[in-house]
Image 1 (cartoon, rainbow, N blue to C red):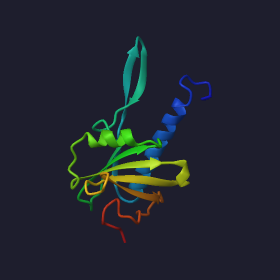
Image 2 (cartoon, rainbow, N blue to C red; image 1 turned 90 degrees about the horizontal axis):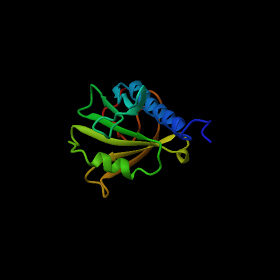
Image 3 (tube, rainbow, N blue to C red; image 1 turned 180 degrees about the vertical axis):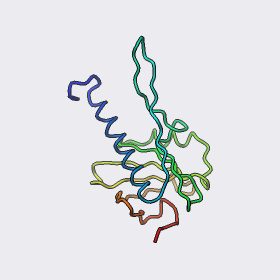
Length: 153
């Protein structure tokens, strides 16, 4: 079971998800991005009872980041789930300016052995999303250019 906690693995899954978000944020900071993670909020559930709940930006984003040499804001939904259809639908429900915002889903899966699958919103792609896979190596930009054209020397 989930270590005797109510809800089985819920606490460990939430912790793993937050750890993945932090890993993405740390990676982006290591290559010069300024990062803001969506804050958790306390929710009243009864007399003297509160729980922390996720409070995504625009109801769909975990991370927003800016870089002084990029002309767009990076908008990221991080997930550990294998099925990302709901994540895509949540992001597609927002009206984006894909020139000013780079909308992405970062997915960590065990099958990638430390790699990250990144889906980038692109209306010219057949299903509206481009797929990239790379490893998070601090200080190293991904070769695919998913974070823009600027590359530090």
